[in-house]
Length: 500
Image (cartoon, rainbow, N blue to C red; front, side, top):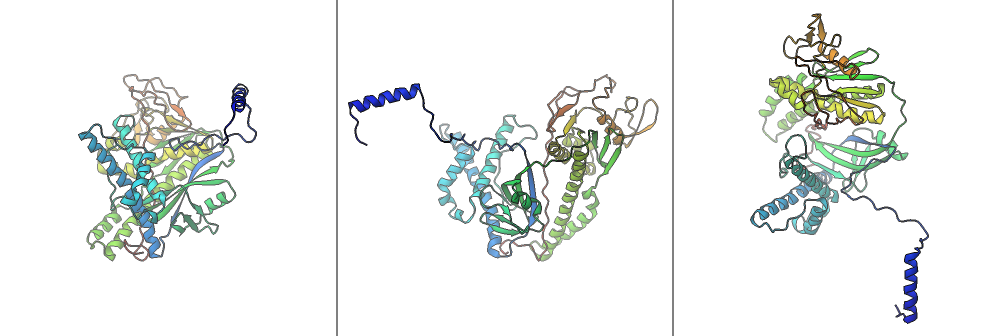
């Protein structure tokens, strides 16, 4: 650049002063706002809802491709264990030398350190998708964050321990893809994933493919997982809202139980009892028989694999029956009612109060904790309201007719006795009626000490507002875990480790 003379420099200074006093807007498009970083939570755009689509796919018939799938699972596990070893080494070094500079526990720092040393610690890394290592490190960051929050008593619920190394025998194989080719092909029988390529689906992918084809859905990420020897692909998508017919302006209350999965009472006076499938209880005898047969087989033999596959088939059937019952119930409630009242259950305390092992097993078999989360998002889709009643409200012990305290002949009795009229009252129907009329039916007292019934917590998202209960405690949120369906293969179709 040529040097400017004295006059040019003076002119340049003058132009600079004028530009500061009267800034000139540049013509053309304005600068777009910067994208949010990875520390920001993803927000569903207006007019869209978040949905998941799951499909069971077949193991690849080619040996090299089946090994490639297993290699992706191992790469994610390695990417989880290696940074965890670095974190533990830094913690040990800080105990000896407080001035030791440790590696930060955030995703950016751990992934940067991995990219720096991956050629030395894992020279085979290029054979798999980069998403294997990103998902493994992200899982470790989440585990460390949960441990720190639990240690600082910020995280509620059960205490979270320090992360452990993942074992090849116990860890569930899975890998998440957030970039690359993730789609359901036009033939509606093929699912394509990065590096792994096409996988044959055992069911039609029409419900996802047609939405993406017409532009009503967008795939955010895809997760490939193995459960009981079978492969599953789950797509997380955002889908445009569908204009549903508005639900009737009626209110319904749901009382969950073990004899009946749910007892529903609505404002029209209808009572509906949904039976409990109890899939585990119905298959206990067959499970014991298969368990004895499995124990008599030689491990890794054909007979051992067949017995294990039959036992896993029962597990898959139990999981699917539970999911079917809960989804049918929640879908019916979301489509037919404008407001649903449900009680806030503490499943862990309910299991502890049962005493006998068989009773505790029945609570787990019913999967009562899956009802409320499903109602939450389904009612949000229908623009309906979910009301969560207080946990300490004795809906089953208050007589809906006269408001007296019902007498329980024995623990967990189905029929309760009215203290005034001495009539028999069905426990579940009475509880559903009390929840239906809450909070309009304001009863002054329901116990011998005259405790006043607390108000319900109204929330659109199904979560309570931590209002004080009848004994001064607070309502805690309910923690649930989603079960993943699956089934083992028979001897002919299951690829054994080391062969396709």
